[in-house]
Image (tube, rainbow, N blue to C red; front, side):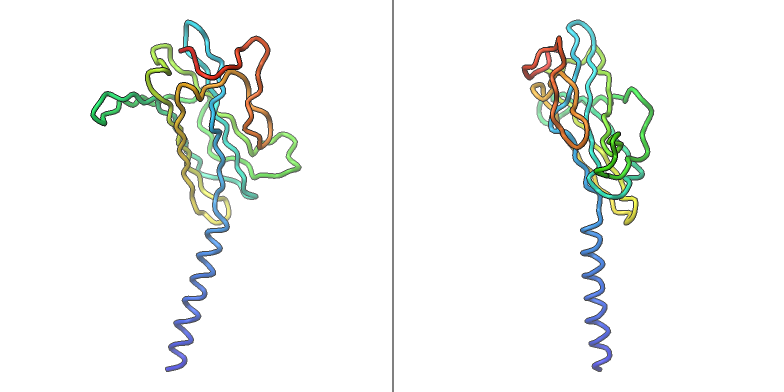
Length: 176
């Protein structure tokens, strides 16, 4: 009887240790809280969303999408998928302080069509990725309103700061 109790207790302890390991070894994805953009007066816009892999392992099976959403009243939304300017990215490199190129930080570039008015809706970005070692996954979703589009460029590395570029306005809000 004591062998049965010992087996059950050791099984429970092993499960707790394994679950704790999976919680510690999971993807840590940081997505910018603001969108950096080059907003034109008459045409569409170019916007960038920055994603940083904060783990020491590569992110694999990366999937991401940007939607433009408009409220039609009574909880009904019109949703349009916006395609990235470059082909899909399948992985994001691991974080390393010695990486001078900061390949763990990716900026996704999207062209907003001219028929979309950012003041009439919002952008919604979702990213899903697997941890390269443990296989656990993470999904992060961010919502960007009219005032979240800031002219400029993202700073390099893990920073999410947007730097003003000469010749662009630095106040918030996109004029499209």
